[in-house]
Image (cartoon, rainbow, N blue to C red; front, side, top):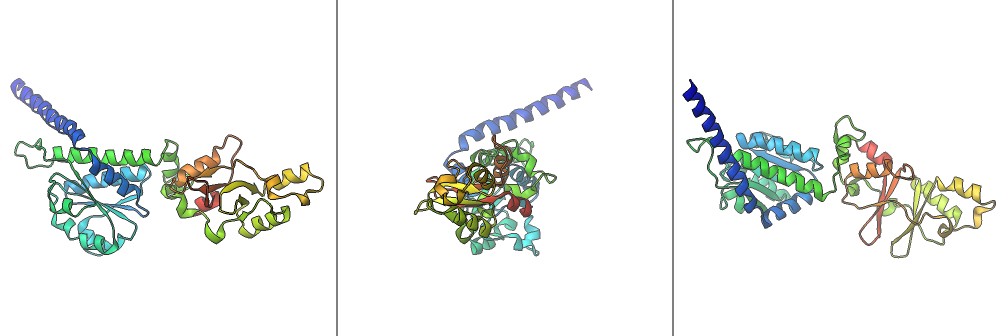
Length: 326
């Protein structure tokens, strides 16, 4: 028995070495294709649809869950289900992430026409660099070839480990790129304040265009009040002629104005505006926006001004919209 025990332990340690060496070698495979994959997934305005068959499908479910919990909304779709009615899950704006050891899985190749018809970009994780999936992908993440820990080199073992590691690399890169913080997990939890809507982008929920409350610096107090009342967001942006943010006036400011001025009707937006309002970019997650509103050092607020890098105003994000979206 002792000899058998020694063999079992030795074999297990050998398997660990095989898989550890493969993971270490994976580092050298990460290059421009990985960057292209991250940028493709980051540009997704819908959802990431993960798909795979067999062991690849099982690890695909885990990757989809990891992506969703770190700020990239994802779902797993089994190819067989897709071919029997669930292909309607595909929509313009989505990104597909297909997992296949061979890169030639028939069930996945059968889904490519759906992607092409809707213009859905494809990222794949494969072990074969010149496989059918790799050739037809926007970005192909090649994790092999690598020897399986299985003595017959048949059972997916090492390849599955490498797939999970690559999935983790994608999730963390996307999480860091979006500025996803530990506090954001609280909002993404189903029991959180705004649930899964927290993983959406600010630009999806903001009020822009004709819905944007705006005045110029010369607007009178009455004009500012009427604009706030008309747009019903509790705030008005004060803009230059080209749309650059100069400040904001909120309905909460009027109490202060009435207390400070016995005759306020001669004041203009320039006189009463807050010149350093809280802003956020359109690509930020709703979870981050809610946290910014709730944890403002001077006290919580209910709206953020959405701006581009040049401080041109794109819209207003209101807390109530974040809550309704859940």
